[in-house]
Image (tube, rainbow, N blue to C red; front, side, top):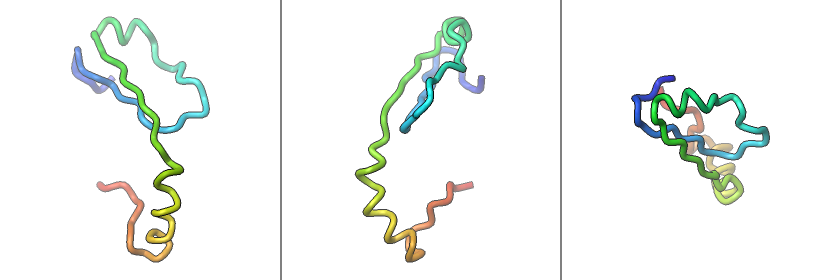
Amino acid sequence: MSCRSGGPVSVIGVHGSPVDRFLADAWMNRSLTPRTGRCPVLKYMKPLLGPIAQGKVDPTPPG
């Protein structure tokens, strides 16, 4: 895992499958804090699709 011991691990978004690939002992041995949240995709999708199609917004991740 690439997280310091005692640090938070965040899972944000909309997930359709169970998140079962995390081993509980790995979280507990390192005192990690799982945090989750939903991403309101539908709220932002319509206002962003137009500017993306027009080339005004670049949806590629930085880096």
